[in-house]
View 1 (cartoon, rainbow, N blue to C red):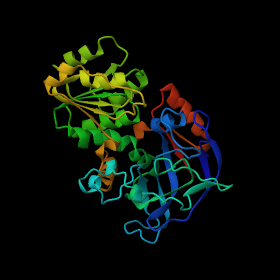
View 2: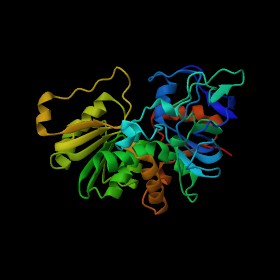
View 3: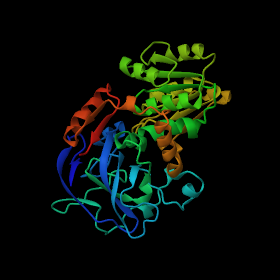
View 4: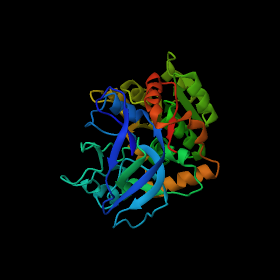
Length: 361
C-alpha cells in the first residue's frame, strides 16, 4: 500500500510503498477513507516530541474494515469505523474505572519479536505511530483502537472525531461538565478549540469566549457558537476577560500547548473555576502559577482526548452531527490527496489553517 513515511524528524514525509501484515487474533485491517492532518502530528514530524523512525504518522482517521482477526468479537468486515490513538485493553485499572483514554496496557500491541504491523519493502520495520499510523491507504490496528459508527455518517467528517472533536468536546462534556448558563473561555481556535466552542454551545453555556490571534479563526469561532471573540495578542487580555465575565469564567479550555496560554487559562478563571489543558506542551516547558491564587479554590487539570469513553461517546457525537447539533463541516478547511500532506503540514506551521483532510479514493 501507499503511505507517507517519516524517515527523520524535521524532514518532509516521503510517499512510498509499505507492506502491511495480516491481522492478528484481535486486530482489524481498515481501508482508510479519510485522515485529518493534526497539529499533534506536526509536533512529532518536527521533532518537538521525540519518536522512533522510520514511522508513518497520522492518527485522526476513519475508514471501512476489510479483514478481522480470529478473536475479534464486536467488529466485522464492512463496518464503518473511527479510529483513536489511545487504544484500551478493557481490563486494567484505568479501563474498569471508566478512564480508557489513560490505558497503557501493553497487551494491545504486538509482542516483542513478532512480525511488525508495517514495514518497508526491504523488510525494515516501521515504528507504530500512536497505535495507528494513519497517513496510509490501510491501517492495521487492535480492535479496541476503533469504534463502529452509523453508515449514514460521512467518513471525511467522521475522521475529525478521532482526535480534534473528541478532545475538544470531551473537555466540555467530560472534563468540565459544563451546565446551562455557565461561562467558558477557549484559548486557541484550531480544530480542538473550535470543537470545544461548538460543544459549549450544545451544553448551553451562556458566555463562550474564543481567544485566538488569527482573525479568520475568530470568525469561525463565532460561527460555531462563540458569543465573543478576542484577540490573543491584545494587551490586558486577562483583565478584559475578568471584566467581561464579572470576575472570570467558570471553565477555561487551553488548546494551544504553550506555558503562557496555560497560565492565561488559570488567570481568566473566577473563584472556584477549572482550567483544562489540552495542548501538548513540549518537553522542557513549565507552567508557573502564583501560589496565593490556589486559595481562590481554582483548579487546573490535564486531559488526554477529552477523557472520552470511546465506545459510548463517539457514536453519540456521530448522532449529534446527524441531528444537526455538532458542526463538523465548518472545521474542514480543505480536502487533499496523500501526496499533498507536506503542504498541509506547512499550513499548520503558519498557523492559519483549521483542518486539512486527506481523502483516499
